[in-house]
Image (cartoon, rainbow, N blue to C red; front, side):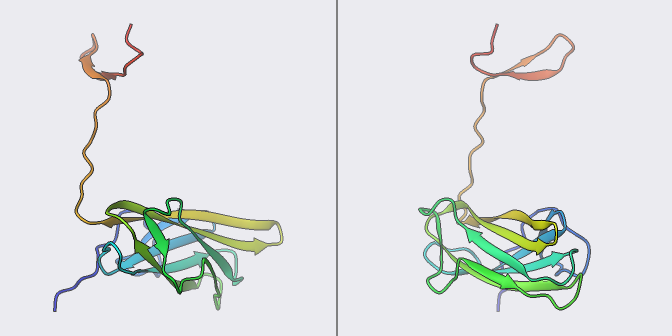
Length: 163
């Protein structure tokens, strides 16, 4: 049987006891790693496995899921918009799974806010998880015109800034 898992997306990897295929977004004392389970398809639930690590002790981490474009992506019917990830020891990695449903093709984003309460107050980080649905490739649009300076360097002159 073929392996239908999507490849991990590029991000800043944090070394440590994380899955090899996971990607991490380091944000201070809390990091969020993620892995898409399966291939994103319009109208079908997509599971995303999260691994939460904190250097702040063994306090639980609150996870909030936010979708900025409700026409592109939504949480699955049974998915809560937040979760609490308990950890058993400092440095331990907690895990959570979130389920979303892509509503169109293209690059979609699920924002994951991770926060932890400390004696100094709340500390948090937000990770935007990119989800590429379909094979649609965005065309690069060039702005302005390309010219060459006296020193031979290429520069792009934007409209309205030409003198």
